[in-house]
Length: 308
Image (tube, rainbow, N blue to C red; front, top):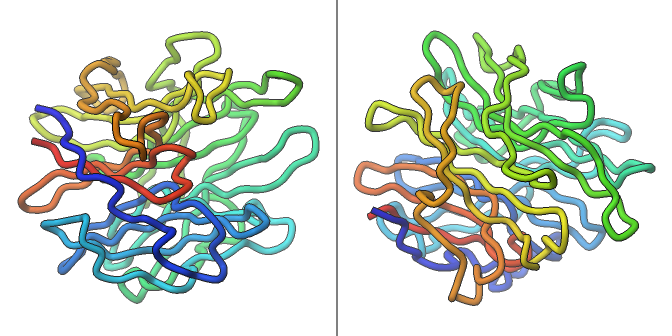
C-alpha cells in the first residue's frame, strides 16, 4: 500500500486573483456533502498570507469545482499575533459549526517571525470565518518558550486532542536565524481551552532537524500520523528540504517513528521533485487522500495523492 500521486490538483497560476501574488500553502481539506473543500494560504505582494479555499470533486480531486475569490480570514488587528499572516492547518465540524485552526504569523525584529495558534469559527458552512478571540488559543509558555505552529485537532475520548509543533531554539545558519521545532500535544474538553502535556511526540532524528504539520487519523485500531521534516542547511528546495514522515501510536501520546513507511517520495514529477511539505490526510466514503505542497513551499499550488 502506498500513495499514488494524482498531481498538482490546484495550480494557482491558472486563476487571476488581484490580492494573490504567490503560493497556495498548507492545503487544509474538509469533506463536505458535495465536495472536498480545501482551505489554503496564498501570499500577497508583501508576503502576507490570508486564507481562502477551493472546492474539489470528491471522486476526482484533480477536478476543480469552484475557486473562492476573497479571503475567508484576513489579517488580524495591528499588534495582534496574526497581523502579518494567517496560515490554515486544520478544519473540522464542531457543534454544528466549522472550526478553523490556524498558525498566526507576526513579524519580529531579532528573529524573522513569531507564531501562535488561533481559532476562527464559521456559522455559514465554511464560507466565511470570525475569530473566536483576537488573541491565540495556544501560545508561547514555560513549556514552549519560542513559538507554536501547525495544529491538528481531532475528537479524543471525552474531549479533544491537538498535535502541534513547538519551537525548540533558534540557530544561526549562514549569518541568518533559522528555527528548530518538534511535534508535541495538548488536550481540551471543549476544543477551545487547551492544556499542554509538555510531551514530545516526534523526537528529532538529528540535532538540526525540524518537524511539524502533523495530520492524524485513527484506523486499524491505531493512530497514524503523517508529518513533514527538514534539515537546517539549504532546505529551501535544496538537499535538506522538507520530506514527509510517518509514525504510529496506540494511545496518541507515545509514537513510533517509521519514515520509510510514509508511502510517498519526492519526484520525478517537476512539481514535487525537490520538496514535499505540509501533509493533510482526509477520507471520503470511497477513498483516502493526501494533500500536500511540493517545490517552493507550494509556490505554484498544492498536490494530492490517493491511498491504494
